[in-house]
Image (cartoon, rainbow, N blue to C red; front, top):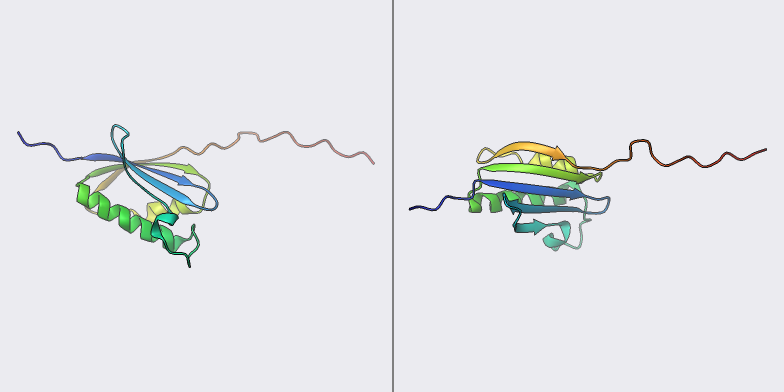
Length: 119
């Protein structure tokens, strides 16, 4: 009996102001690989730039093709600038993105305003 290839995977994107971390897991939640700007080992570039994120997404695509993953679910968390760049560069014809889920926690009403000064 032939074993079935890894068909479904989850891509978790954590966007901070300084860095973007990408984690690829299987459908059970076991980690395949994790990428960040530090994994590029280029000291002359800043961490959270669109060019760095483009390089990281190229590496992710190569890894997905090597694992023969056909479907991808994307989970995004954070308010950093890398969130839109990753989604923009992850498009491919060899695998399909099923859905994109935004898990960012934002305050509904915010903190209470400070008391006004009397004059």
